Length: 502
Image 1: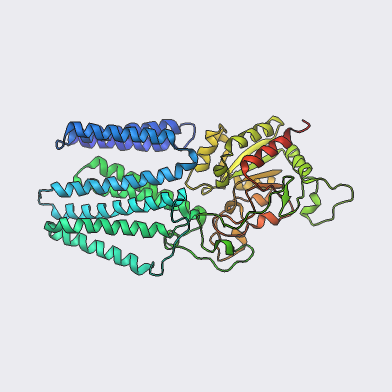
Image 2: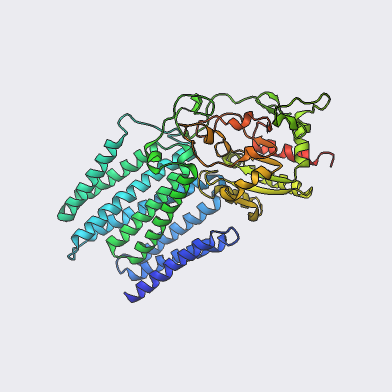
């Protein structure tokens, strides 16, 4: 027992050190390796300490799982990483549920019936909830099913309370009389599956980072309670670590979006369409897909809502003054001037950049800007992608120096001193309506203050609202130039303008 306790402390310390190393992109790889080594140690020791079961079968299952993980890790694209994380959360929850189910089947009774049956029932319910909720999240993120949040007429507090009350009643019944586990344990599993399905069904794309973090926490909680049920302190300790880390991350995500966790789980239906309020095109908050109306026609010369866009040379547009005769330039000349004259540049990447897989094109633009002597930084909003850290991973994959990546609190004071901001595939995280309009899904949400820069170039697919369904009032400001189209095409155009005549 003393060896097990010492090893458990060592494994948990390995996980904590791995998490600490992963806080910096420069040491994240070693942190990931240390975490994997700690997990492998836990698996091996559990296998050694467990005397039941077949050695050959256990080794076969470990080999199959390891091979599947290796193939998955090598084949998954960075754009699909949120789906992969959600899937792994689901597998973690399912594993905990199966562990306690197996323990129930072989349980012989040792005088701790209340603790065993209570923890087994709770772990099974939370594990099943995590599994079904994660699978629905994967289907939503992949666009295979339930692409928009679904609000059922009876989908309210009463149903959730009824499911919770039924599960607790059954667990209490089992705890006092374990003989009925053959009937009640499957019912708890079904209730957990139903709860997870209903919880995630109403969630839209804008809230997916929060839900993924929450499900990650649930998978850890299920594992921790399962460890208590089967008497495995390593499982209990590491599960608790994952549960706490996931809950902290969930809180960070809620704060970044100015959302209450309960409001996320219960859904949000915005009011009528108005400027800076949810668009009728996206009536439900956090729609998992953009509006389906036909996109605005792209003007290859660079236009702003169909009008000629002001450029760096039309500084009078900021104050509303009239432009002097003979100074008018084409939109492309304006963009070229803005790019070449800017000394301090901030780039704001968003999920649209990830969809377009434009990170390598963005790297080429950064190289060209720095070659002319410009200082370039990246502003990373906590919910810029569909999971925390998504943008950081994509940019690092393209070889962009992680020292250039700055979070919201660090970069926001620098926007007012920036000569140019380039927005690539981001909408809600730079929408000034978050600070101006009330009663919208993003009201009060901390945003990147891109509008304070001297000039702004927007490289988005079109002028439609983001996942929140709120019109972006930034597009109509006089110092903003919009370049509609796929970022894989528009970003190279900026690079070509910069290199023209150089």
